[in-house]
Length: 229
View 1 (tube, one colour):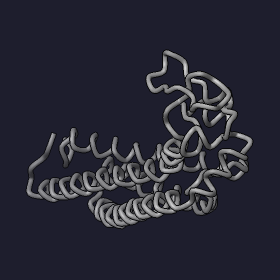
View 2 (spheres, one colour):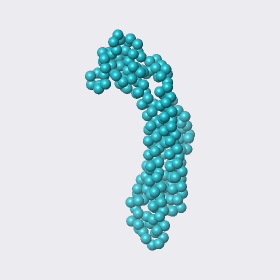
View 3 (cartoon, rainbow, N blue to C red):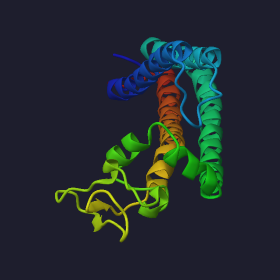
View 4 (cartoon, rainbow, N blue to C red):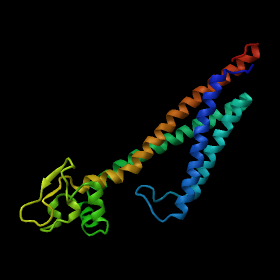
């Protein structure tokens, strides 16, 4: 029989397998980002080489944890717990960093009315933004002047419609929501996703540390003649 409880070992191994998958996903993303010229707000400074290094560190720690659990090696488990605590601190720091970044991004966005107007009204993607986002104008439909484009057209199946402003040409029913709110939601999405991801990693790392200590305790107890199934 093993030195540690088998169910505990399986749970510990599965959590580490999760981070192995995360490591390979990060490597895949770094390869794609290295060949793709498209950039997402908030991730323009990501370096594929740094992502590779970080992904390899995640893989190393996870594989070490899997080995330590299978081999029931206390020394490897102690090293794993120490590295996991370091990774937990890194994840927490990154989660806080993205929280701060999202706040700064929101404040800057709310203070950039002129840039938002130019981006939407003069941009080449204005019709797609309005049609897909179900919005009209940067701040109001009147941003388009007297001629409202067809991309503002709102059908009866849409819940938020309003009549077009008096004295304007275009669809009779238009979207009532402004595109500023839609753009803000789009710009906030990457840092919000990153926040949730890293805070989730912190929770999993805390669980791994707890399981690691339990495995260490059980393996030590086995020296007194007790075994766990």
